[in-house]
Amino acid sequence: MYISRSHFCSLALGLAAVALPTICAAAEAPKIQLTPVFEKVQMTVERPISVVVPPDGSNRLFLVQQRGKILVLPKDESSADAKVFLDFTDRKMEANDQAKFEEGLLGLAFAPDFAKSGKFYVSYSQQDIKRSVYSEFKVSKDDPNKADMASERILLEVPQPFWNHNSGNMVFGPDGYLYLSFGDGGKRDDATRSAQNLFMLLGKVLRIDPSKPSGSRGYTVPQDNPFVGKEGTRDEIWAYGLRNPWGISFDEEGTFWLADVGQDVWEEVNLIEKGGNYGWSFREGARPFPLRTDAPPAGFTSIDPIHEYAHSDGISITGGFVYRGEKVPALKGAYIYGDWGFGRIWALKYDKAAKKVISNDLIYEAARDTKGKGLMKPNAFCEDQNKEILVLDWGGKILRVEAAK
Ligand SMILES: [Ca+2]
Ligand SMILES: [Ca+2]
Image 1 (cartoon, rainbow, N blue to C red):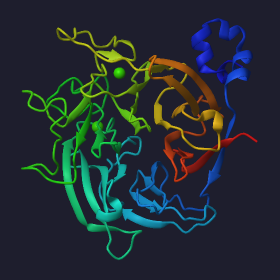
Image 2 (image 1 turned 45 degrees about the horizontal axis):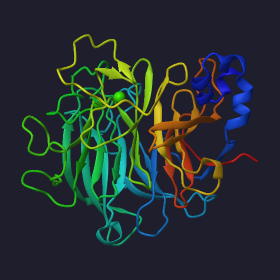
Image 3 (image 1 turned 90 degrees about the horizontal axis):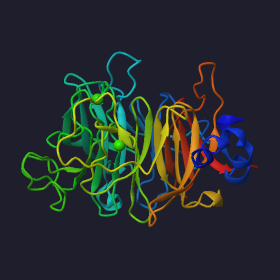
């Protein structure tokens, strides 16, 4: 049937894919299954945001839940014995309207020297004034499975005009610096015109050294950031022109992958370069954004996504990472990502030298409800301690990707 065919085939063959859908799908796509794990761990709050493995050799999995807790998952996947590492449920992170669901605890990253320093970083929302907060914490001296809640040091607070498009993803790069992503502030149409404004932090990727404060800042800006010393810019900025990054990662070769959620039509997979402009809101996907009627400034250039899909194939991209595990050999070297709304997962292979997508296989498709919405909503793709893929379902399940039996 049409919706289960390889997306790559439809792109390559156009209408022919409609006429001959099963030939493509059968020839290309590796078959996977999603196996539920940690089923007894109490998801007292749904909405898992990420699973992160600290670089300390402990092979522990830290589960971040949007509504306020970080859990250390049990070594025994069949056990219920998760430890509460950090609890923000007493902080007012969300507006009092459950239909507005993009606020909360949004990111976790462990310092590269976590084994020695015990430092880690979280991003979360606060109200009155509505804002994004990025903070450093230390692990408790007495218990490696507890955060020292008194150790909080706020690095950065950025006002948020609206409840949505907060992003909040964080990851350390191979250079040891912390990369943070911000959405455009929210509402629609880049309402605050932030994404192209180099004096605002919204709609950007930032690059900072959080290990030491500098002047009035809670962090230091690396001197080789692209806008250091340029008038009318914030020197924290690494890349700009982003709408709502959801899923950022570095692969083994140091390439920076970022999925940018689209507005009306196009969802994007981007490779982030130093100083790069990713187009929003003059562009959505690889074309002009029609609701922006003013002309871009003279000399405007932007980097198109390496891959995009239209809202006939999904409505909200969830980025992932380049797979290096063993369980599904056919996926090695593929960028694993999906669509939150339709419940789809794809594996994209990209030739960096030729700058070409080699293949983009639809490898999983969730059942849908009567309104067409996926019954499994992939909210994150995370690398576990063995480099295998964990899919976090918005409804509260943790699923491991395995070869189909
Ligand atoms: Ca916002
Ligand atoms: Ca873009």
